[in-house]
Length: 138
Image (cartoon, rainbow, N blue to C red; front, side):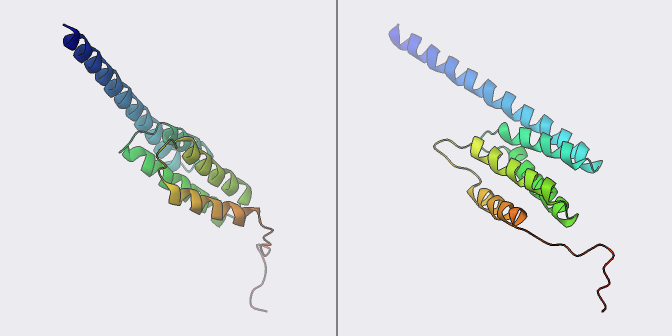
């Protein structure tokens, strides 16, 4: 009788863990798809917020987390190419903090943290951009 109770308890724990994993992955997908809509509409700041939230819904083997990490990086690059280091800095910091937030005994995406920190250092350094209408053929 005791073995049946233990087995029932273990099955209940496994079922609840499975439901939690499925729900978390579904939320991650929803936020990722919201980010994709905003990204397609060139609403990069709003897209970054959605991707950041998708990353916070981390579960092992979740493809939406990886894709959200890549999209946040792309948004940071877009802002840098637009010479908007303030927004690029916000985006890279958002990426880095999201990746730190999902760490436990396992540390996923360590290389992305390092890449983000490199871009954060660059965006914080004093960069002088030439004027937009500068004549480069002097």
